[in-house]
Length: 425
Image: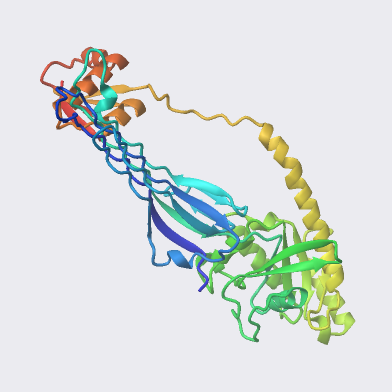
């Protein structure tokens, strides 16, 4: 079954908790702390694989969870790290975040992306030994692994996209110029899933064609099979627009498709296009010329219309050569653009890890926020007085305690650190 869209919950492994432990061995008095650190949680890694061609595996598998890290042990034993979860996906899969942001674009075979990072393991009490603190009874909790709900969208990697109304001859043409064997019949919407075919042009170039289900007027609003399959021609260098020569209104056949391309979430009507009149084998040359003249009245200036027949193969070679020229031109443009893009600095405003803020919610409640202090808080056991004292020490070193005092905090007030815990000031 061909599935090209799926929504999954992705959860990296949580880090293992650190351990509070002291040596207990015969004849060794006050052996000291030996609690080990927790293991790192496993990452969720997406890998582009040419051996995959559908997202059908995720039709029922809605959760992808990596292994958590194990807790630390006695005698300074570090907990076992969680295994990474390796997920193969078809080449051309885009990973879209919950807010519509692009998290990853897997467009090369073997490409790997860590889509969710495992949490770091918490430190055991052996980590906190110092000359002043020789018997610490504090250990950190492991960090939570990244969790995100993402949409997987398969967008085929093709050079040429075949578009047109149902029964325009797209599948027939693909079967003639390549080894692809799409289903062909004389009723609309015979093609219900995209098909790919590799076409060798004059022994000089191999061009990948993608045939998608036909569009009808109102496809953008969900009529027919909708326009969802247009995602498979988003990446193509050129669109081959086929128009049936037997259409009653040949101008409407053209404008209908152009309107649907323009209504798609990405305006595809501006992409390079080759217009071809199909099924001319049963028509007199004069009729073909009249149809082309009628069609050119609604085309942009200097747009050439080619006449072809997949059955008799008339006009096929000139069409393929024209397409090869456009594809090579577009490929060269992309290659030339890569060094320019690499040289352009990307400016982002990153939050300073050490930055923090204090907000007074009411007379006795203060909220502390900041990336670094919240990470410490997430690893703190607020039910352990030694752990709370440690977070107090960290806040004092970072200047947060002074900030709380400036905002009017007094002994007995409640201090809450993000969403991770609270304690009495």
